[in-house]
Amino acid sequence: MEPPKGFLATLWNFICFLPYFIGLLFLGTIKGIIFCAPICLIMTVGNSSIILGLLLFHFYWTCYSVVRAKLLGPVLKLLICVCLPVLLILWVVVAIVGSIIGGILYGFLSPIFATFDAVGEGKTNVFFHCFYDGTWSTIKGSFTFVRDFNDVCFHSFTSYMEELQQKEPPNGKYYEIRFLYLPLALIAAVLGFMVDLPVISLIALWKSPYMLFKGWNRLFHDLIGREGPFLETICVPFAGLAILLWPLAVVGAVLGSMVSSIFLGAYAGVVVYQGSSFWFGLCYIVASVSIYDEYSNDVLDMPEGSCFPRPQYRRNKKESTRSASSFTNSDSFKPHPPARANSLTNTRIDLKPLELLEGLFKECSRHGEKMVSEGLITPKDIEDAKSSKGSSVVSIGLPAYCLLQALLRSVNANKSGILLSDNTEITA
Image 1: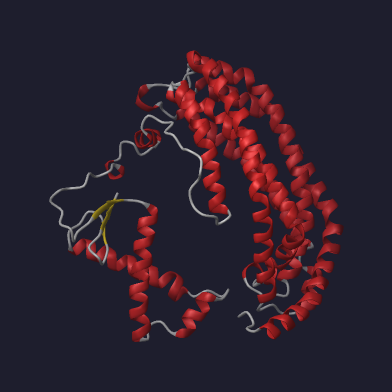
Image 2: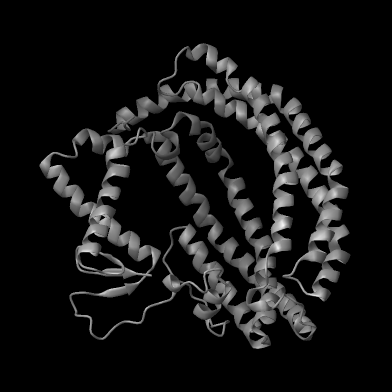
């Protein structure tokens, strides 16, 4: 469905759409209120029975697996076994409360979404499905959720613990606690919490008005033009509620930033413990503010970068990252130094996802223009790619053809990496 063009067309579309949306929302809300309680009861009783029934098994199998694990040292094994009862109690509380909240949300929202989905494109007997969809399917979905939860708590849990028992320690050294750096790590964690909580909270409060008005502006623009989240019928209730509840979303984002600042600052203790240096922990405390500021700018589409300093808090970030990877011994993941013999027309770069995507986009643009001029890609394919229907010719066929051409070009040139049309070789 293409958005209407012109002010009068968009205004008339909005006037016709509003009662249609309110009626479906009202019907879906009634079904949600009716099915909310039984769905919550099914999921809470089912999940709670699984949690309490497997509690002793979880305790025994975890202790057994930790004791037999070759990855862990004796002191770390003792500490885990001592703290295990507390962790299991927290698991019971969090899982049961999560089941109650999840049951309420699923029982209320699933009928609403199903009601809007019943009037989507290609649906038949719309009147019947508006009342029926989201009733029996929601009940079956709740039982499916309980069954999947049982599979995770029993089969997946046992498989993970068996894997923990059989895994060999890397380089023949098991994980152990270094008590020498624990006091410094605790001090750094407390300092990080004390610094990051007020500073990040002030940054979040400072940027909250921008998030509020920019979000409203975008949502209202999509509502009038039937674009973005309002283009798909099933997404309309969520998008409509987003306009009404957007101030609460902004408040939640600010509160979430405050809560996350606690863990972000406390991570300084981990940096001190891993780097065996208290100075690195102090550098991380300063850098964490810059990390949050830069990340929030990216989320809000504000100017890139940060006005806060970002000192180095690792000895060698590339080496530490590679040593922590499970592919350390694989030659294909080692960086290749630039060769002096390479000509200026045959540039060689290390593998970076953004560079690979940029090269793929350029190839798609070049081959796409050629195919359009030759009539291989029709205007209908382009319009389908823009709409919700999608087009396998543009979305799948064109990128696959570009990758095939790049691979054939690399094979013919006898290159170890991917050779683009501008003679740029992308290597691992």
